[in-house]
Image 1: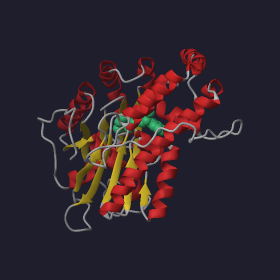
Image 2: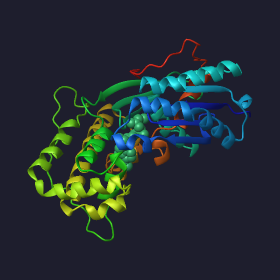
Image 3: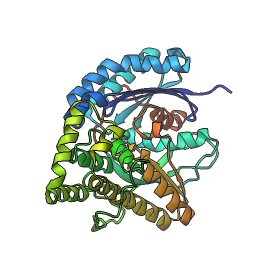
Length: 379
Ligand code: KG4
Ligand code: ZN
């Protein structure tokens, strides 16, 4: 059987990515050019620099994705591109390039929502491993830009790949995204950018030091009026700020780490010797609060809806403690929790090509008027 090969293009934030996926299941190539080194010194993504870098990288990244897949442009069945949400200038690079490519090759163009892409990162890999997840599912998309909870289902009769996916939004963050909270706390403590991966590693037990104590600092659970499926993380970041104000003895080590970062020492193993036990305990307590909140609200939603599958995706889904806690708590409640590999948790284009596959089969093609939509919603 001849397979359907879709080229995905992703440029919504700070990764320029291209990938070729066959039949929404087999990743033939997955190229990601990260701009993190460019944005690091500003402690966050600078939109103008992101657009400029996407412009510089998009052509070589797409070329490499085709080379790695061993394909020529003419072998593609469709071009899929992220239309939003994201930074408008960044999105425009991918949308304009994708449109031009599709037009010149006379191939269909498929527009994809970035959040839908994150959901398909999990579905893609599960399918590749021979197990199509049972739907409906509750899906948590948790990254630097988003913390949203959806109910995911497929329309129509079972069996055909063309059946479209449909989404219902159950809740979302009222303020910061969870990844943003990690990044802001890392900034307060001079742990570099992005903060999530470093904090994740610092709170892991290491052979040289005792495991940090996640019960050392009590943050209290987040109270949310109204929808109990909503999230809020800005209070947690403020609580860390107040803790630091109340503990000026931590300032010298913060200054020492800032110094180390300027020398390019940003790896967890380089920063760990510059972190006191008190700091590691603070980080472990912060992470426990984030993880417990995400896991509790997501699994409660699944139980209330009688759903047995939970999908977790987005940059923060790479977090080891989040994965372990979800798996453990899911097992207790008889809920299957699925994650993408760490590689497909953060932004990539394989997830965009995978999300485009059912749309392509259903003939949902974009026209040449397609424009970037920085505040595009999924539901
Ligand atoms: O999905 P992503 O690559 O980009 C967005 O769409 O935002 O996610 C990046 C976010 C950053 O905030 C980063 O700190 C966080 O994901 N992150 C993590 C981990 N790896 C990345 N947070 C916690 N633990 C991790 N291991
Ligand atoms: Zn993302």
